[in-house]
Length: 131
Image (cartoon, rainbow, N blue to C red; front, side, top):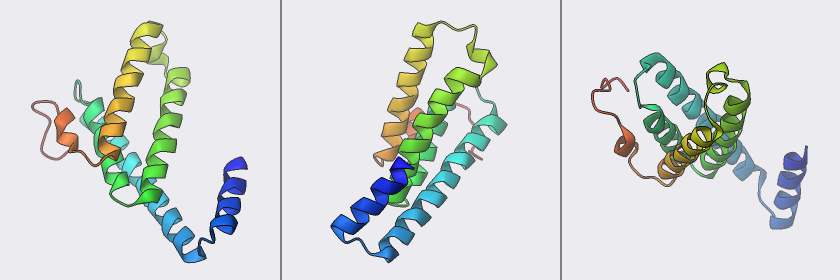
């Protein structure tokens, strides 16, 4: 609710046209789809040490859509990191230090991709070309 209120307030103060909001929301929607596709591909590939690549790729694809895509990438990836730490049973046996380090590395890969850098920087050797 606070986010919606903030968006409406900013649009009134800055005089942003409804057309630009439609564009922003479209970019955000499609950016969220890019993140979902990267996540689905990561699960399908099930390739060791590939998660950073898929983080970077999803964020890169979303950011290429524009400011709405960047916003979606920032909000969704941060939320997913938090949810995974809480809900994924495979994390229960891992140390807090390792979880923090892995999360920080994921966030770095996210920033790398959102900044427009080539996600292949994180691509593991042998990952099929399909991805």
